[in-house]
Image (cartoon, rainbow, N blue to C red; front, side, top):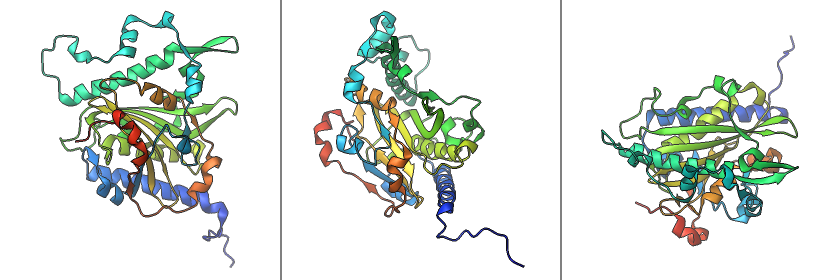
Length: 342
């Protein structure tokens, strides 16, 4: 009797998205299991290669990068950002202070017990996030006879509790204190904010995800933090389990990673069809003495996801063996903004 089974031969192009999704699920789950079994605060290139994670340095201000297919999220241009002006009428005294200088909030009040160092660093990372929020809500421009802030002009919104994202496996995205078996060396303080992008004109939600992470740890350029890598792998896994994205075959992730002592960096990531997680990492920027890189983080926090079709061709070619590349020669001019290396 003739078989009624569908021919799923390797040459069937219609089945390629299905094969990619299965490979993505396996890759994301593999990274999460590896992190759970070999947990530590950060992972060097030898660990990342074993996890099938490839990391490259990139200059987020280089137009050669932002114009290329490797740039998954298009930041606001500086000219676009300059259209917004500070609305001092809505700025409180405390907000004005945060916009111009950072202070340790835990030092403002008498403490009856010692403050853990990892909490102090988390608190400083939170101050950078708070400054971003103030900047985005208090800088405004006129649009169609209305006055809107940077935040209101952006289509990024926090994923709501009723979204199907919350019915997916969440694991490490919820933080290190919620049931994971982690060694004592891991920082206790860890927070993730997750956003998705809604195209108001097309009335669709894109598979792109944006994360803002606060970690009571310090990062090095040749490493990824546990909270960075775990969160990226986990949100991809969540997206793969959402019914509304069952036909999507690429899940780009943007991360604004803020950490100790008062530093941050930008990460972009996606899985390719070889099962390798490709991560693009900016230099580590120093907010200790100044906040002149705040504009850069605002520009990326209010970016526009690139249409998947624009870089679809980039996922049909297998990546080379997992590796970590450090292409820092073109970043020499940014040395004053880099965190001191240990």
